[in-house]
Length: 84
Image (cartoon, rainbow, N blue to C red):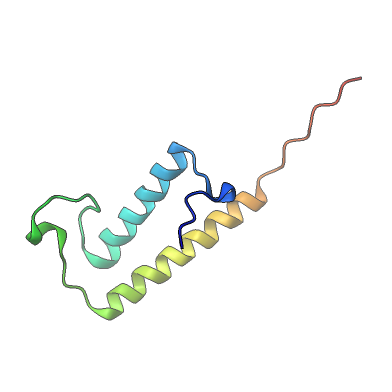
């Protein structure tokens, strides 16, 4: 399903970069993959990983998403300006 046109899923460049940074941290820690960049060499772009490593990485990504939602919900909402 393509959600790229969904208005609620729009990301700012900063949030997209932050998300990619978080994904990179997860794959480094859980899967031992140095980067998510395409390097155009099979030995660098394809990796053998165990299913339990994939499970740990997916769980870490889910937890990162939950944490992100908690942070968003805990931010105070801006009050609209009213004219007197």
